[in-house]
Length: 421
Ligand code: UD1
Image (cartoon, rainbow, N blue to C red; front, side, top):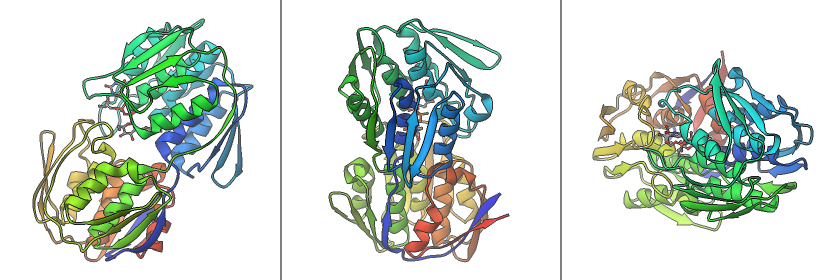
């Protein structure tokens, strides 16, 4: 199993490029199931999750051609009724994105029940509620979900759950609704940039979608969709992670190929902490002196502060002056990085939904264990300011969602190395 060896590396300086958004790309790949014409994607990140989604799709007969760096051509002409097996779904919950499009186009889909994961229970009840309201018949047996429908029909569906809107349910039900008979109105829909990206590609395929990026999306179903060529939007969480890397190391970093408007909640907060942010059309300059006051944040659906940046800001809070309070409202158990940050010497504790961090603390190197994707990023950030040489184990979590993180960070001065055990 690979690990990172990281030495204190302050300040980071230079220019780093952001890759295509993992979360967008996974949805766009699943959308290829809606048509028998090819979908051509560009700016596709080279990530384990993307390869897992490719396996899920290939399993059902989708032909995937990696036609060049950052390019994928997906041809679903020969796709059959889908069975997404446990081995793939347990690796990546987004495998269940195939339920909506496959049911809409082929009338049936079978997907292993995803179960819980490190950051909480993560049910898919809202995905299933949406598909059922579109007329699908849903049964579960032997750990599998079976979805059947002759032809889906439009409906008014409220997708809001107890934690607010669901990104995954919005993606799944939106895709299904494009081929349903009649009009579907999704209320309480997620408004994340990844939903807008998906809606744009669906539009290019011939779907009639309005309101993506708001909490009400209207879809007028059509009988068939065509192919499209589409460029994946930049990864806003990767951009935000580089911004924190610059801030925590007192660095001066230009983050290129990003969408500054998608990380506004993150850059607004950093500006409030005294970090200099200069926005270009596709660039962000982040300049810091390593000193900052404590802060309070609360994770919310977009455009609020993203849960996927919570762990990275816990690392940053260890270097902020005073008591920071970081409230996690989306996933009940997203605190596994807390004991690991404490191993570096951080003064950090969980209290209900809140993570309390007192700083600034002197961090010293430690061997630590990554527990999930974003928690792993937080450990890398802490290791960049910890005295000595740290080891970060189980970085396969990072490889799911950060493209060549160690190579990109090394280019801006981080002393980080991958070691294969
Ligand atoms: C997506 C992102 C993930 C991000 C999350 C929140 C992908 C592949 N992953 O995950 O990186 O952290 O959005 O921005 O895009 N919920 C239910 N029932 C459901 C579905 C969700 O109760 O059927 C709950 C979840 O447990 C959670 C909340 O709703 O508490 C939000 O989850 P959701 O937006 O669905 O997250 P994902 O789509 O899984």
